[in-house]
Image 1 (cartoon, rainbow, N blue to C red):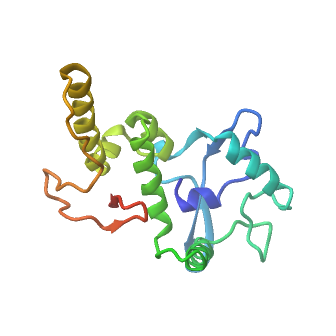
Image 2: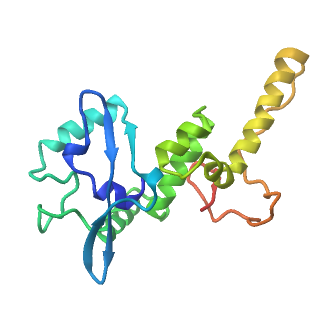
Image 3: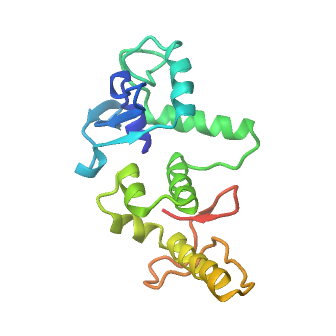
Length: 195
């Protein structure tokens, strides 16, 4: 999820029994004023299913929050947190953990990359992260799907051909359309990701 979508979540958006989380608004700042609006595209209005471990953590967290907002402002619980406060908090957490600085949006890319690596199909991922179409997801993460195709070919070669072909690893590959020729950043897991 995007930072603005997370900050705009209300407890009424989450069904603890089914794990369904409805994403239907976003938070952003204009001239130091918090604005709450519908997400940027029709596809961004969506429902995702949260895993049981996250539902358990949110259930415990909810007991500590007295607000309709999941992540209320510490100064005014009737309003959501500001995006800048989340950025500052993330940097503080990363610094204390001895990790390099990353943008909040980098977490979005890391999730998408790991989801693809672990077998989530592109259509499901596209709907989960709120892309307008699977084509958008494929375009952004083609370096992952290209490597996954190579891995599938090696897997078939091993099983059907009986070879001991080496499995390629996920790594940055130059895009055929040459719009991007180098990664924007490298994550702690050693994988290259881009915007």
